[in-house]
Image 1: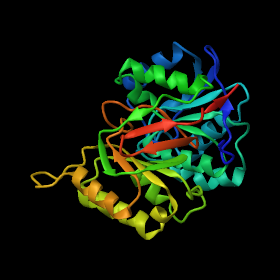
Image 2 (image 1 turned 90 degrees about the vertical axis):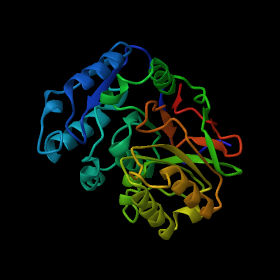
Image 3 (image 1 turned 30 degrees about the vertical axis):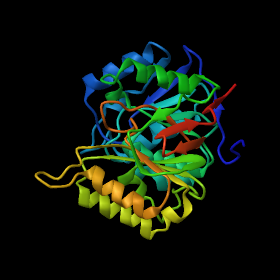
Length: 304
């Protein structure tokens, strides 16, 4: 069954023009340049001089970052938008984005972590986007990840399936893949920027959150009724989430929480802040087979 909720973007081609933006935190320039070199070898990547600005912990003030983001999304020549870094700051832009209306024709936004706020906002508008590496991460990931990213952006066939490592709750479920960073997802509950989750497969990942904090955020999702609406749960990387000298692990805590939902759930997918961050399109239909620990993509992110 085709997914009528989310609209694919036109497929990219080598040497297409793409925009590079910094909508959240300031970043390390050498890491940015390493990622930019990989993108620039495939596409004509452009960015404005303001991308290197700093305002406290942000890549410039809100007005600069908002203007850069909206210009990139509305530029008819830019076929996709790549984010320099996550960190924090994207959700500060959401209210003003909503006041500006839909952001031009569909195009894929690529990023993760704090960029989850922009993904969720785009999904409220019926847009597909790509949960994938930011430029400051891309240069240290395996070459195969970059190849997969280009395929997601260019191929009208569904992305190759991904394999997890752990079954938390057995079962099979299908639906559009939504979500991203757990911390950001919980911050948008109760706001107009959370897409409709009914029937979705929920993707969650995070970094640097101790087990009790993961429990607290998960419980927030439960109290908000999220697990009553979604059909399955995909857990990516949870890096740096261990309690020092504790007799339990973050994996044990998450597995116990997942079992309490009764929803099909598999963990250990190479998505997030770990050594591998495989790009996945958000908004496309997927099949989660938790017993086989597999995530199969049933639609492409792009159309001819």
